[in-house]
Length: 343
Image 1 (cartoon, rainbow, N blue to C red):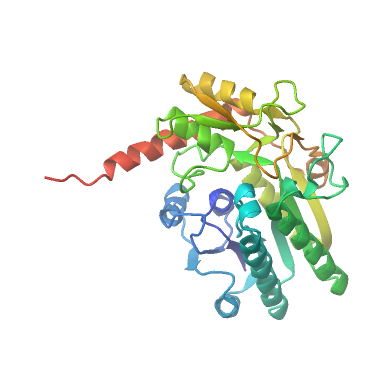
Image 2: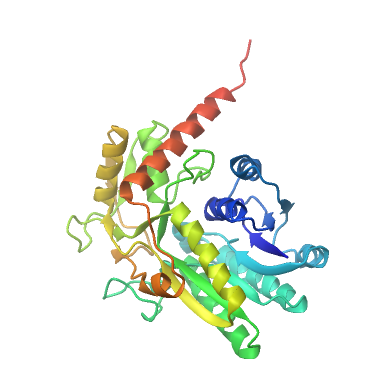
C-alpha cells in the first residue's frame, strides 16, 4: 500500500519524499506548485534513482482527491500542503483560512470516505505563540499570534475532534520549529519566489549577491543581543522525523503532538555570524521594525519525540549553514547555465 504526500514538491515535503524513497516506501505525491517548482519532482527522482506517482492537483478540488483515493490503495497520508508565510497571513488572513483549513477538511473527508485514518500533519511551533517559559513542551498553552499559526492550531483541534468522533483515527501533529539547510546533493532546498520570508534563504541570497542586504526585523527584543531567538533544525533531520511519526501512526491510534527541534536557540545575529564563518562572505544588514506576529524567543523541548518516536536531531549549525550555501551556489550555477544566449 502507498503513502500519500500532499505538498510533496515543497521544501520539507521534497526532503521527506527523498528519505522515504530511500527507505523503500511507495509514494503518491500531490502538489499544485503554489509554493514549489515543477522541476523538484524530477530532482527527487534524480537523487533517489527511484520513481513515484505524481499528480498536479489542488486540495480544494475534492473530486480530484476522490479519484486519487479510488485509483490507489493508500495506507496513510502525510499532509504538508498549505500556505506558510507569517507576514503574508497577517496581510491576507482570509486567503490563509480559506486555503489551509478548507483543503484539510477536504482531505479528511475524502480519507474518511475511503477508510483511511492514519495521518501525519505538518503543524508548526507558531501554535504556541509567545511563551513565557522556554524550552517549550507540547503541553504548553496554545495561542498562535498570527493567522498562519491559527490555521495550524485550528486544524490540530479539528483532528482531535475527528479522533473523538471515530477512535480508528491515528494522528501525529508535528510542530516544526525553524527548518533550514538543504539536501547535501545541492539539488533541492528552500528556493522561494521573490524576497524570502525565512531567515536563512534570505542570508544565502545576500551572500550570493542576489540581494543587497539582509533585513533584520527588530533589534530591540528582550534577548541577549536584541534579535529574535529561534530553534533551527536541519530539514533532513525534520524529514526523518516524519518517517518516525508515520511508523507510529500506522501501529497505534490516538492523537499526539510532537515538537521537532534541536532544543537549542540561536539569535539572528548568531545565525549571520555562523553563515559568514561557513561561507567566508560578509552579510550586510539593515535593521527594520519588528514584523507583525513575530515573537522574541522560541525553542523546543524535543524530549517527547526523542522518547516516544526515537527521533533525534543529528545535524548541527555548521552543517545547516554549509548545506544551505551549497544549495544556493548550485542554484546560481544552474541559473547561469540556463540563461539563453542571444546572438
